[in-house]
Image (cartoon, rainbow, N blue to C red; front, top):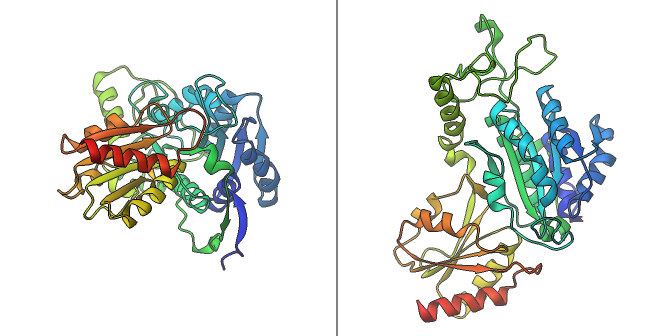
Length: 382
């Protein structure tokens, strides 16, 4: 049975979604504007048999999350810009060792200490490439409070299914916004748990062997009686280090293909009024709220404007742009940064459209009026 509607903050919806998804371990360090997530985790996790640990720093928090996940718990941490930077080495470790976990980044202004209480979307590229080397990652971005709940559940499901860290890339506006929300009945949620090996059919368990041919090795939790080796070095199917070229190529290829071979399962986006659009806006997070309002106003005035709202940022939904009709001439990328996503959008459009950026990075939310003004400028001059 669904809960009664109530006023809920985005950060609160995040922890509600995490617990509903089965999260039973949280390690973190307080940092604005994500602190409410840690506060609520400390309050709520003990009531469901979970564990909350406030660690000494962001690096240790990510390490604790990895350890808890290896021991079989669904685990999460939350942070913002500077803390996200500190977590990167351990995020890379989780990518290579295929440890399921969820990292929430409630973005704020940067770089460095930046603007702790003001919104930004400046961590888009860091979410994808913040840790070194070729690595798999999934990044989701909610625009509404209820969607924070839904995408938090989805983040855990994707992380468990593909044995990969999943980042929930929020921003200060969505994190601190309060909206009327009715949460679903927990029994109605689809919950995915990590794949386990059928030990009756395996004479010797190799922790990184692709037994099913889907690129995702089944996972035995620490403490279940089967010891195995985990290392941040390139490793073979036994988990032990190797410098052989063929082992390296096989491992990196498998890590990347387990994501890119499943794009249609992972990627989500919404299209609004694109069927006959001449100009299409691309946006995500809180900026998409202003963009959809602008599109509706422009539509009421007869302008043929549409919107692609990204719910998955990485892997990037190139299909959304291949599906655009031949009527489209212009694409505007609206984001609260200096222009991090525009080149990726331009590559996805393959030269078919004129590409324009609408960027705001002064600590204020982009308004519908600013989006409208940009559309009119583009339509006039392009």
